[in-house]
Length: 124
Image (cartoon, rainbow, N blue to C red):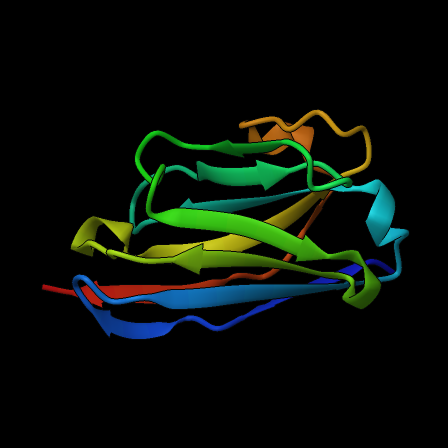
């Protein structure tokens, strides 16, 4: 059974930093592209970042470029999202997702497995 479990969310002031983690089990983690999405209240899921299995290609949404960094540790089946210079508009539930086909996609439908999410709240 595949499981993706996010952690590291919380309440932070604008301008602050947080690092999210997502631990995967039940899959060959090193073969999967990993992505992060977020969903703010009453909004659709929004792509945040993705990384291929070799960590050689990273993709970011324009809204987070230069502020967020995706990374992974294949030995620990973990993907990270370092977030800095946080803004109130970054407030959302953050989800990690896994894609077996390695598409580095920005659409939900391109990912096979999802975590349950972790809440990030940025106060102004």
